Image 1 (cartoon, rainbow, N blue to C red):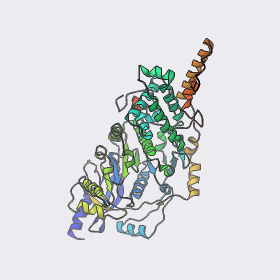
Image 2 (cartoon, one colour):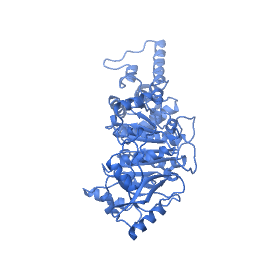
Image 3 (cartoon, one colour):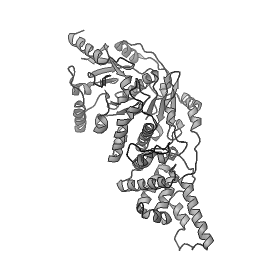
Image 4 (cartoon, rainbow, N blue to C red):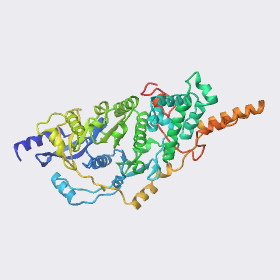
Length: 514
């Protein structure tokens, strides 16, 4: 071993030697040589300082998420992951060695020990796992406005509708509730009722909101809105001492990135609201992996970004770690990126001026290294290699280390279809969330109100017939909705973002100050 290699090894060993439990990431690389003694470790104690896994397509980001999830599970830490392509279900079964894995094991001087991990499969459509739902109330107006792609004016109207529903104790459970409220408040009796207190809603704005809702329904995604709403306690399960890996398979809704990325944020926000303060733990209670994170931030409003920043900043005190996965650090806003203390950066490719600019900005975020030119190493890393710096137990960034990552121990790919279906059918979560529940909510309350009004008119005398071509009151209220139950389907969210209340509790101020 050369003097430089020896010096590098000693620095890495000193920098990445936690006193408590840790995740073994791999071994340092210097001048193309893997130095197995230069072990690169991530302290479990620092996992709630959040992190970033970044890199170009095909550089191994998904497998890095897999090896992190496996070792967290081994340590008894539950994990929530997004499975974008449907190829992470193999986590449930032991992997099989091959020449590439054997070669890497020899380089790292670590034996390959195949293992499977406890896995729960979830789905937003209900077709690929247990149904995940949230109520419209839980989403709240800010997140729902992003899903519906509303402009500022329309978003403001949506906030008014939520405020009216809260003031009048009308739960907004599913999309039928929301459509009913939009119609009621935009026309006739409802419009007059809110005019002085909340302001008038134009028919053009209400019509746009309704069309956006119908689009979601036509795409077959209304099933994720309603009851039974997902219980976040189900994310904290353990089996035989191993943390359960909860996998949300969105391979069948890949074309709706705003929908599923916003749903994940609503889930994360509910975890924040519901979990008690945890203090400084030896290991996190849960680690949340946010794959394809750039989809969350694209074209987001200032209010939306502020909500993300607030949640990420405060949720670590609840013992929750959040890791974002995306192609480049520049995909993540600076206000969020500054809170991600653990960095695993796979190779960046420079093909365009924008790529060159992203590389320059990424280089500037790394500590100075005595062993690498950061820009050169970032563009020369191979698949399964990454440039790493994490926080040590004192909260200080570690020495930058180009690292050969250890291979995952479970199958690196999807389960066979028969095994996948068996796992879904055998899960108690599939049974628990199979049936939608239809409690009394805004739809029923407003329908009763309209019917009572018509009944009063009938007692006083026959209601005047509508003019030719004009709809009756009830037709107007029902008209722009697609009518009641083509299945009063299902949802969830964070109404606390408007009211400051935990939707599962009776009240209290929230982190957004309402």
